[in-house]
Length: 501
Figure 1 (cartoon, rainbow, N blue to C red):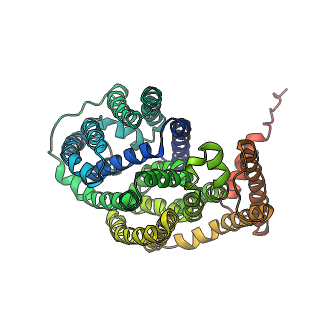
Figure 2 (figure 1 turned 90 degrees about the horizontal axis):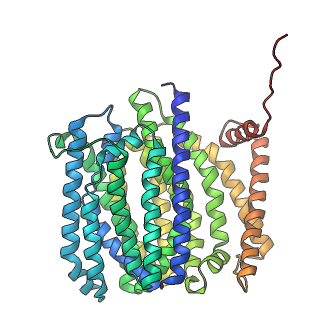
Figure 3 (figure 1 turned 45 degrees about the horizontal axis):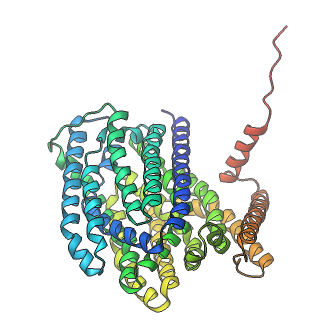
């Protein structure tokens, strides 16, 4: 397959992944808005803490088997069956450990409700290990439309079960029931959608473990790094603050989770195909980074700026403490882009060890920052701790990409500079017209006017400044040129040639 066709297939795959995340997020946002009205922050905090604990145990067995299969050429049944067997073992062990630790966890956090919740989550973790390994082929072959169907079926089922249970119980069990329903549906659908029928064997475990051990190290360290806030806040400030902080971080990371991560999910098999064919992936890394920043950077800063009216309108006054968290974390999104694409590039080059060591170094650093920040400044201090940690990690990834793919860093700087300047101009314009930070309105109508008015104005300012900078730069190749060309192709009428006489 030629480079142009492969890039086109990767772009289509990225489009499917973005669609999946947006559709999933659409369901999630509706669910979040409904649940925020039906349940209390304490319910969210309880389930967030329980899933964090279960996830910590699950991360101990997360050895990147799917990533190893994606990097392999062709389909080797021994590898697939071994990966399935190891996944089953991991799931069952995870369930047993979570169930056994439930009473201890409940005692540590002085909340007896955690015992029963963790028992249910443990059963779901064991069941999830039996998912059909054959579905890895959807991603490996860039057949992301099939993955969309699989994921969205489980997502919609989660929403429906959660909604019904929330209306019936008005308790945290609605969230637990939704999580369990998602796992059951996903396992069932994996066998309905793919004909592969795995068998139990460990014949190829050595071949898989050589690559996967570093993925395991990165997964464990990354999980501890990303979930440290729940433990620190839960211990220092209580369950309610865990729920508020988690919701704030979730909203602030919308651009990363809905755009960056889906695109990276498509980039890994695409970059791997290029690398396996002996092609240089440096140009593709630069193109991907600049295109992602064009989408993500203005959106993240804009979300940060309108946090107050957004929270007031969508969630209500109970969640006002989440506003500073959203404002602070939105300023660090570009570093998340560097970390996500950097990790994909390093995995493509067969260097998961570098990603692992970065995660290992970041984990104690973030924990120390959280303890100091939360202990001194509360939730806002926790947000600054996460942002600074993400910034340092992103910088390390940038330099590691330059080390293994020389020339990438100057290329990124040249292509992303215009987007960054336009985003700063947008931010300045919004602060000027609002006389400072954008505050919530006195009622829902006023908040809606502030939200949509500022979003529209900011988008216009960003577009005008970006276009001006691109024209002043001499219309160079880059994401702006690609976007303009796509718009022209979409809206320019096609000429119909008259038949020859």
